[in-house]
Length: 386
Image (cartoon, rainbow, N blue to C red; front, side):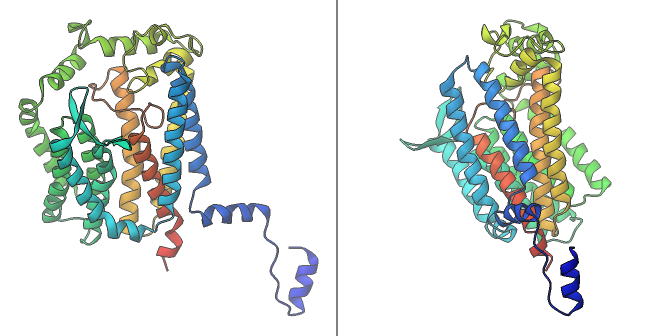
């Protein structure tokens, strides 16, 4: 503090030192309820995704512009959602859950069929979207809202209720069929239950119950879903059929070497050997053109986002905030892990896009809406402690 301020304080005059420029910038971010570090990392990730998408889409500028518009809409939605308080999410969680379940039922009745599955609702001339994406947020919000009223760690009765809450949207999504999304919805909601403090005994019991249900799940899977599992175990059994995707993706990644072949120079992607190269398998394009170094840079960027999100979740000052924030960021990590595992051949192909890199609108909106909730919880943490 300058000497004239000290002199004024000694004479009994009130003193308020001028705020620094850094403090003013920080207060601006607090007023709009955004975290500048997380926002910057997300923008960097989306920018990187657009660069890779240009190559993966066959150098289609229309695809890049379309994805950029989707990102912009998703960012606006994130900013709007961040302005609401966590108490608002707690209050409206049951309504969002019920609307999501109703839309999943509507999909089964009047849904639009695409690529052999009925997963979309269409408002003619307005929008075509997947209601199952909404449940990736609505289900964990509902579970967190229920557990917020319970004594923690949850008792067996509470876990059963949570199981019903989770099971309804998971079953409705699985019968579309969309096994990948149903697994992600269940994962997002189950993370909330785990974060609530399950005992190791209950975790062991639930794990054993899940293992016992595997034969039942196998019997109720569609033929193409079973084939995906069998192909995962031995891709070479059908190299020109079911094993084509895995073989081509691993070939593309391996051929990139350390530094890659260069942007727009990938043979597997540019010559269209690589399937779904702009959506589920886009990281194979990155691996071929930017090599191991490029993939490590992307992994480091994801690691920074997850680390920042976990820090924000740990600073939440109420049960609902901690459960929801933890679920959002850990589910984001699961998306990344499943997609990379799927493309590299260590997990079965389940149709999970790479977050904020793969082409797609509904997924981007859902992900950034989740980050908007996370930023809201972080921004309101001081108010919640009063």
